[in-house]
Figure 1 (tube, rainbow, N blue to C red):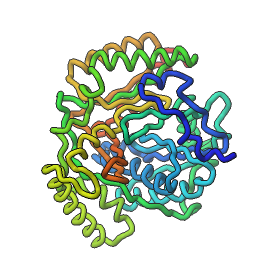
Figure 2 (figure 1 turned 90 degrees about the horizontal axis):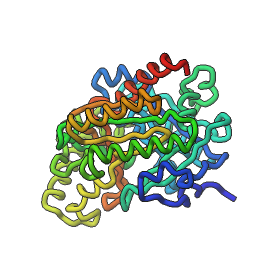
Figure 3 (figure 1 turned 180 degrees about the horizontal axis):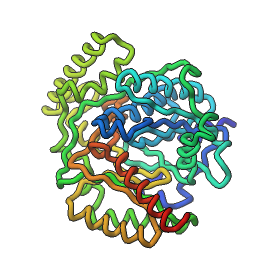
Figure 4 (figure 1 turned 135 degrees about the vertical axis):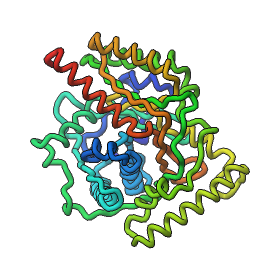
Length: 396
């Protein structure tokens, strides 16, 4: 019996706290593969102001693999400077080709070096697994959630020189082939309505699954207690949403969508995108209904379809709040860190950055949200520094 429909047939959870419950998850079939990509030397890229490029390439990889899947529902996670996707065996070669195409575009459009790999689930070391759940974010967006330690383990495998060669997709080994249809980057960064946009990541330190789940439940509840409900701390606020006409900001979309064109062809795409921005502004401003969608609903749907809270062996969330709220949360996290219950990292900006996947304007559109200026990537950098403090103190 084919395992291809494994993910599509998993039950859907509607309460995010259910990601802490083992029964919410199914184990990824042994014949599936985990595809991985991240930007090498991303620290230097972010320091050079290329955080938008870094985000765009992670989103572009997801776009290319979704297009290659041709309607097969696959789980994925946007990681800020890359992406993780899981595919059944029939889609492996198309996925590898799509990742190779994304690497080519990253190099040519942004001078970024993308590490790409695929790892068979059956080769994940004993003691780790990839467990997947489906969390309904909105009517039109069901998000993949991962547990079991397998995703974090794969990250280590493909970055370790001793094991990476077995799984990395070497340049020239796969013909680059893929479509980025649906990738869009047409919005200005979104100012925080409360003053700060916080990118947060937390890892429970307990090895026992139940104790770790308890820590994550505490974190979820503490965030709610300090920042309020999801709407109160959502980084996408409709009054702050504004499309951009800037050639510099639209260059990411042109670089990816027109990667195979000449310089003149890329300029043509940029002009086309500017025209689409003008048309989109008019349609949304006046709430026009077209065959594509009811444009009065597009911004509210965009906010609902935004990827702002996720779990992939680590809890991540983008929050809009005040400095007092952030200091209260950070104080609580620091106390739990001292008790050796969790590791955390956070980054503070004054706005959020959004990258979009738009396959259907009437509902099937997804929006990846990150803190501006490096967001999740810089939160992860702080997280790693704190992890080294933990190791030096405990010898673990």
